[in-house]
Length: 76
Image (cartoon, rainbow, N blue to C red; front, side, top):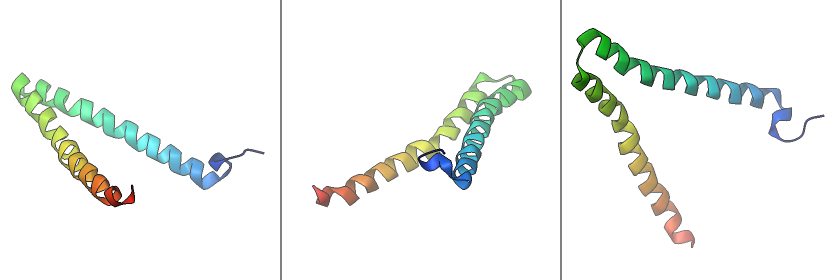
């Protein structure tokens, strides 16, 4: 008998689906600049696309970090 969260079939399916989705997202993040480079032969366009792909992580990461600090600042 397994112990912990992996004893539940639904949790195993959830972890597997999140893992596969993450792998797919990373493959797409790698493939898009390569496709742009192949189609345009422009390193600048590929670099611009990669920079645009990072914008949501930088913006929402900073916003989420600020919200986390604000929500826990009164708990000390």
